[in-house]
Length: 257
Ligand code: PEP
Image 1 (cartoon, rainbow, N blue to C red):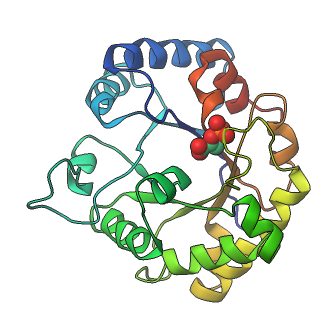
Image 2: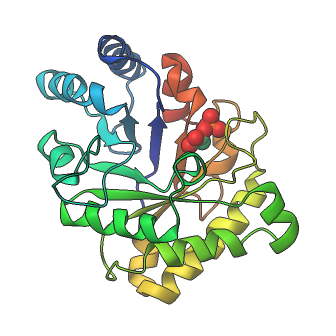
């Protein structure tokens, strides 16, 4: 069995401006330092809005804070006449490591389909970024197709342009659980994450599937993280709302292992 370092990812969405982001990251770092957090045991990554990235990067760099930096989206294109878009290369220049691709809010509010998601995964890799590929079913999908069919199909489609061995993180985020306050049960998350790992094995082989982290996301908070982390195929969490509270996010990062 390959050791997969647990990953706790905080997706701030469109919250915290660049001044607020500096205060937040400083407090988070102090909180983790006070708790003597073992950074080698759990990787913690924040995903601020684009306009905060430079400030957060400077802070992480100056204080040698061991928090990872991610972005919430990137362009499928490398450069050119794409007004308002942000390229993977721009993100890589700011020491961004991870980039969320295919979040359900992008899929529904910005009409990103599987093809766009696959192109963004490829764009992330061209810039040396690790895409956090989000998949998940709606309540209607769940009723119609059962728990795993839609997330597995979305994952296979997202990897259409990606060679085996390319570094990715997968995030299983049932749309019905995001921002709803009602998380999936740990058993439900494990069932789908196991199916996603099977799909990875099918597409990219056993070694790659064994090394890839699969996160659960959807109303994760300090009180339910431990149950998810006990599941063998859940390697961490993508956290939205609860990542905006310093102490709450720090408690999730320090989930009792
Ligand atoms: C998300 O949007 O990625 C998410 C998991 O949100 P929340 O934790 O607020 O459900």
